[in-house]
Image (tube, rainbow, N blue to C red; front, side, top):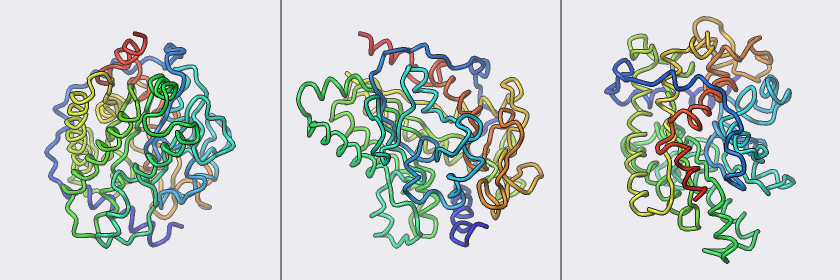
Length: 391
C-alpha cells in the first residue's frame, strides 16, 4: 500500500497541473502520424564514440537502485518491471527498454550504464539520469519551506556528477586537447525533466509561473555548462503529454478533457513549459553557433500516437498495463505496479501505451525513439545532427 506521503505527492502532482487554464487544444493540432510507423534500426553506426544522458525516471537506467525513487513507484526493483526485454528488473521504470536504450542500439553502442554503478564500463558513455529528479536545485525548495521528503537529486546534481566523472579522466575545466576532442565526439542526450518541480512546490506559496521560469532557466544553465566544457552535439527532450497518463486521468474532473480525451489542464502545463524551453534553446543556438542543439518534441510525438493509436499497434492508449482497479485506466493509488498487491502485468504490453500509470511501455518508447531518430520529431532532425557530425 502507498503511504500517506506517497498519496499526498501523487495528488499534489495532479492539483498543480490543474492551476493553468486549458489554452492548448489537442483537437486543433495537426500531427504527421504516418511518420511514426517504421521501426528503429541501427542505421547511425559509429557516428558517436559515446553518449552522456541526463534526466528523470523516463531516462534513468538504474541510478535509482541506490536512491529513493518516486513515491508511488518505489517498487521498481520488483517484478514485473523489466520482464519484457531483460526478464528481470534493471531499475528502469518500464517493462523493458527506454528511449535512451533504443538510441544506444541505433548508434551501435551498448546500453548506457548508470553512473552510480561504479563497476560498469563507461568507455561508451554514462547515464546520469535519476528518477524523481528536479530541474531546480533542492536548496531552493528548502529555502521556501518546501519540506516534503523528496528525491534529493536535481539536474545540477547530475552536472556535478558529470564534472567529477571528467575530473576522474583527467579533464578539468576546458582540459587538454584530447578531452575537448572526446567531448566533441560524444552525444549529449538530455531527457525530459521538470514535471517533478511543479508537484513538489504545490504546498508552498510559489506560483507555477515562477516554477516554470526557474526550471527552464536551470535547464538553460545546465546546457550552457555542457557547452562550455566542449559539448557540441546535444538533444534536449521536452515534456510529454502528462495529461494522458492514467494517474492524471484518474484524478482529473470528468469535464477536464481535451480533444483526445486526456486531462486538458495537465497537458496545457507541459505545452506551456515546452514553449519556454524552445525559446531558451533558440537563444543557446545563437550563442553557440558551432554546436548542434536539437529539440526532441516529445509532446508532438506522444500526441501523434494518442490520436491514432491503432495504426501503431496500440489497442489500450489509456489503461495501465501494470496496475490494479480495472476500469478505463486500471490504476489504483494504493496498489501501484511492483507493490505486493501488483506483481503481475497485462499479458501483452505491446498493445499498451502506458506501463504503470505514469511511465510508458517498451513498445511506446520504441515508437517514440523511432520518431525522434528517423521521423523528424527532432528539430533540427537527427539526420541533420549526424550530417554535421560527419563533417
